[in-house]
Length: 187
Image (cartoon, rainbow, N blue to C red; front, side, top):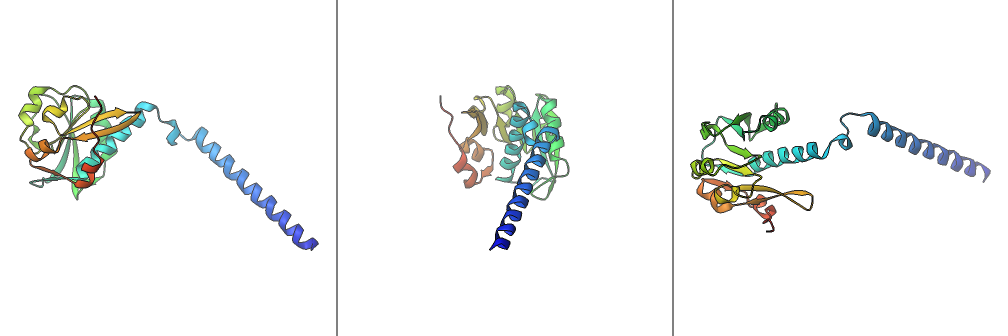
């Protein structure tokens, strides 16, 4: 009986020691690791979410013709364009190499498969894209006039709404899985 109690005490001591060591290791990672998730600012976290959304929007969309390179275009925001280049470096989209370009109103949009408007969405640019096979994504509500996906904040979360009729007009087929996640913004 005495031997069983001694083994139990040794087991408990070893278990407590392991828990304390794991906790100390966790604290070291939290406090000293530059890549730990808690180190991100709110802006960095939001940018990462938007980058992931853009990638997944592309995965769940079908284009009428398959390009040789999948090109993401960012309208008038070199900083976000650079973030996309870093995030997508070495990645493939449906077996295609990924290219990222920063564009402005004078660009040839024919190379873009996805065109992202992080800021204002010029109506005249949207009008020229209306029937082109380009997935347009924007953060301003006027993207819904002639664009396809509206990214917006709702209760401190990034949500999206898909204008599927515009997608069909542009010759794009958006997966029903993605359409079920689409949420209409509140006025």
